[in-house]
Length: 106
Image 1 (cartoon, helix red, strand yellow):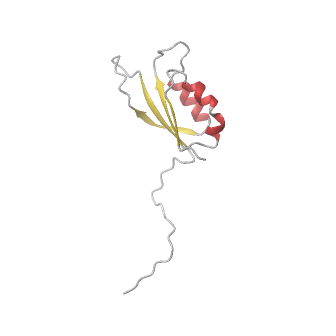
Image 2 (cartoon, rainbow, N blue to C red):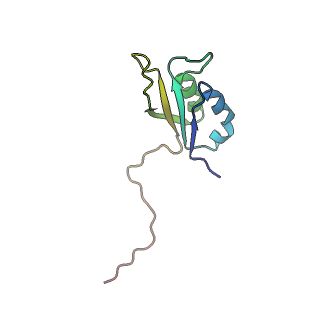
């Protein structure tokens, strides 16, 4: 009933996949992991700023670039980007768990 991670690796069609998942992203899905490129491989392929902008407008924040071993050039060509929805992305220094009553016996 709930999706925690949406992964897309569709050879340059990632933005169209994300657009098609707009209702799902609005739920929101906590994490999006998608291939991104900084240099076009395919005609009309969206670049990182296109994917970033689309997700940012929907409350997703960039976490980092992973599996970025696209070493076909002397510069970063692409990788897999992880985004987290801002609703889930806050780190809390003092997380507290509500526990039941503590019973001590000896």
